[in-house]
Length: 323
Ligand SMILES: C[S@@+](CC[C@H](N)C(=O)[O-])C[C@H]1O[C@@H](n2cnc3c(N)ncnc32)[C@H](O)[C@@H]1O
Image 1 (tube, rainbow, N blue to C red):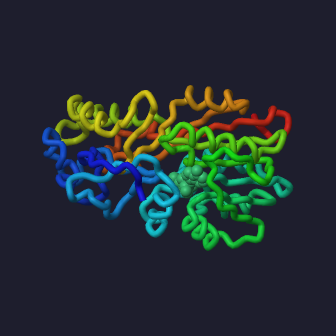
Image 2: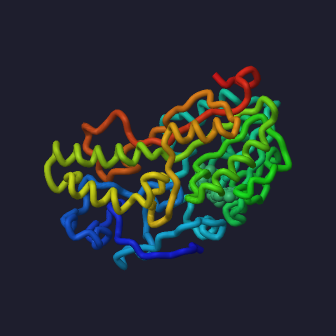
């Protein structure tokens, strides 16, 4: 359930294979898109990757502020089908590479905000003990079904309260869970994360990159310049659509499928972690294929695709391999 609902115009994102006139209904100046054009599509971290988007055809959708456990549980039935799961989509292998380096039979790991548990089979294969934490009971139930290994302990807990967790592990991962638009809740989650880290423990944190949103719109303009209309976006369309998508530039809040979602700048991320006494060892990009963001991307559009930020922090660099 979303609190504080408000209606917003349809955003500039298409859903694979459907006629796009529907979802641009709210934007008169960009009403000429056709199926197959190069446009921004839904990507996801709580956003729909395909299929039906509730309310979309009605010309708008709810803007959900204050995502809560009911919101996440409401996605449970279609999570695997509709949402991007990093364990599936990280084609660069950056996340698994980092986790493999930190793993080992005698090493324990906690997955904070594990959702339906897409990362758990990998963690079970690479660590001695796994603790999976989430506050959405239905998602946690799915994670249980998905990973029945005895190595895994499941904990239902609201991390945003910042209370110390009842365990310590060498490695904490938190993958696209620090996305609540409420800064205090994110801080609470980070305090809980910190509390679960053993003295020399390390955290592997992945968050949506705000810079990547700019990159996608800039790329859509390049597509228009090279391919001509109706592909990509002209400058007015890009300004308009990005303006519609951004809830707050200064806070990095993006409306994703109508849901207010925190996106992070690299500097903001490192400053926040440093403030919490989590030493940042390295920041990397977890890159996704262009198809995650742009429907039918042109072939010449290779190279730097959209990305999330991955950061390794904590410890003192002497214990586990901080790099
Ligand atoms: C976008 S999903 C990511 C799930 C998983 N880490 C993945 O990458 O597939 C975000 C997850 O964070 C969880 N979450 C968000 N806020 C939380 C909180 N305050 N306490 C515990 N879990 C939370 C949600 O329930 C959801 O499962």
